[in-house]
Image 1 (cartoon, rainbow, N blue to C red):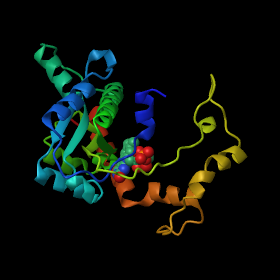
Image 2: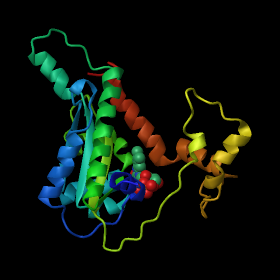
Image 3: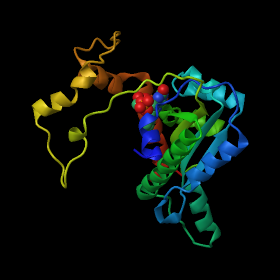
Length: 251
Ligand SMILES: Cc1cc2nc3c(=O)[nH]c(=O)nc-3n(C[C@H](O)[C@H](O)[C@H](O)COP(=O)(O)O)c2cc1C
């Protein structure tokens, strides 16, 4: 196994960091690696927010579904899909009645942002810096808009916490679905009911001890969490609100 593959396989989401800042040299390398990621039409329809301010991190630890480790993270990076800059530029280029960015722009911006984020993850890992994605940055649209000064036509597609692995950190590896359920040759394969149940067997084994939704099995637990948990409902509301601009319903 070469070193890159070994590193990818050895990576875990890190939520506890050494109490020291990330060196400027390392942070620069991470950012430069993110920016080197492929990007649709080489348009770089994204921006990266580099956050070290304690007050902002403290706020994010609350607004991102109360995850205290965020405030103890040396660096937070937020990857925004950013169509604001391009559409402003179109206006400045003398185009009349510039139409709003659409869903195509939104999706390409999100792709660009997430691909850049994953380059940052891999670069960081190679420097002994662990990371964790925080999906909850997609919640609380209005609060984050104000906190981070986000213009319309931007969307926080990914957030990363970054910090050095603690010494002798005991990595706990989480399983993945078997490849046969995820990778199909040539065309999509419709998985039979029995196979689908087998796919989730591993997950059934990890049924949590607490069962806040009074679910009868793992499937019901995840379904109820997805459809009724506050963070989940809030995330959907937030994303829909932001999309109103990309759909042209709001200016
Ligand atoms: C889009 C996305 C959002 C995530 N959001 C969170 C989060 O809010 N909090 C957290 O602790 N981990 C979060 N994670 C990390 C996952 O829980 C983690 O990747 C998964 O459990 C597999 O573990 P591993 O990365 O250690 O292999 C997120 C990961 C992704 C890709």
